[in-house]
Length: 120
Image (cartoon, rainbow, N blue to C red; front, side):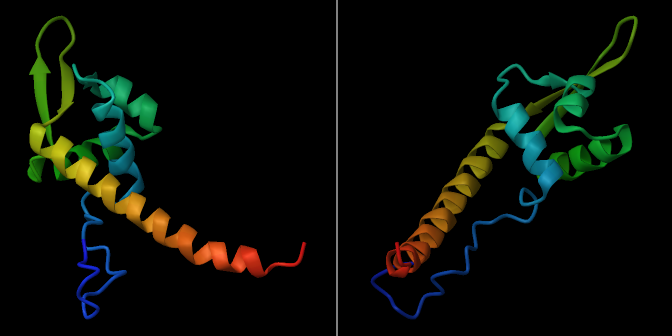
C-alpha cells in the first residue's frame, strides 16, 4: 500500500495484486478453499470452479509451488486428492483482497465526481 503522506509514492501501482492469485481460475480455487476449512476433493473443486482436470491440476501446481495450498492423497478404493489452503495462502489471499478493496474504493472515488456532474 502507498503512503498518502508521501506524494511521490505510486498511488495506483497496486503492488499487492499478486500475479499468482490474480488469475481467474486460481482466484476461484483459493476462494473455494478459503470457504471450506476442511478442504475440498479435487473433483469437488473442479466442479465448483468449472475447470477441466488438466487446468485444475496445473493451477494447483502453481499454487502449491507458491506455498498457498497443500495437496494430500487419500488411499482407499479410489485414490482421492484433498486440496486445502495453507496458512500462508490464507494470509496472502486476504492481503490480496484488501488491495482489491482499495482498487474499488479508488474507482468509486473517481466515479463519484463524474456522477455528480451528470444532468438529472
